[in-house]
Length: 362
Image (cartoon, rainbow, N blue to C red; front, side):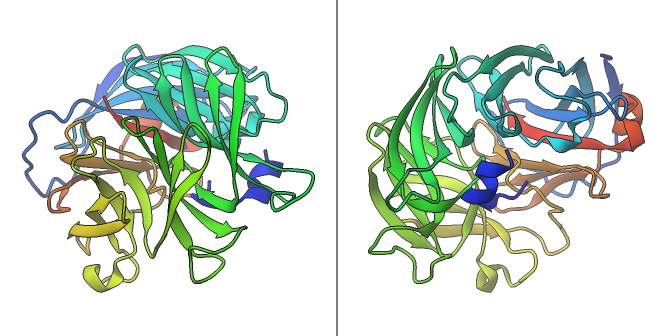
């Protein structure tokens, strides 16, 4: 899954319990008052033609993990192995459910109880033209607000753009205003309920005047969630892969990439900072160590409940080992780095492959 993908591609391509302690490189202590519990949703294939999932609880300090439980994906949701699926993810802290938008199925979402390690519900969207959320947020316990693809018969959106809309857990969808851009980030956004504003980065603007100096330039958009109006668009020379939970005096913690001159590593310039949401100015707080490598899927991650830690994970069929990284947000120090050794064998995963679909502090 590409974190940044043209709309044309996005639109057309559309149980056991056990304990295993792993060897992890724990390199920094951290101070946290209320980090929450770190959960990981792992997808795997018991056979080459079936799909399943496991929920893990991970110790952020050591990387030790417990398999809380496993469950099979129904064929109505996933046909065959999970290898062909890459859902967009959002956690609803109010209902304690992890939501997965299977954009490959064009209109199907599912919820997973991380506490009970089970599939909770499946939602079939009633709008035949809905293409799936690129990012979304639980506006209420029974509805989501999010960004999805759309197209119009004429005008600037006749080759595709985006729109903001509201989806109910009963499958009803209400489209909002169109957003005249061609590219946006998967799974990365900030919704400020206090101002009903949705923030996300977009690229390839269709209307003018353009926010960025080049067509491919990325801008941080502030979108009125009621109307879809873009209230501000500010050019950004960085990419955000995670937002913190709390907006304090107009600022929020972010996990991002792009400050090469600050991090002094052109191939590994990941860092943490504080984003002023009204100006898009980022104040760096720390670059990750040069000897810590983020393998891939840097957008699959979560800040802890108190924004003191950040965890990110990856694991898929490209041949790399699974990886779970936990950082101290205050200084970007690596708290733990583990490869989930033995997990695939414990799950009896076909060909020894697992996919990390979600990393979430709860």
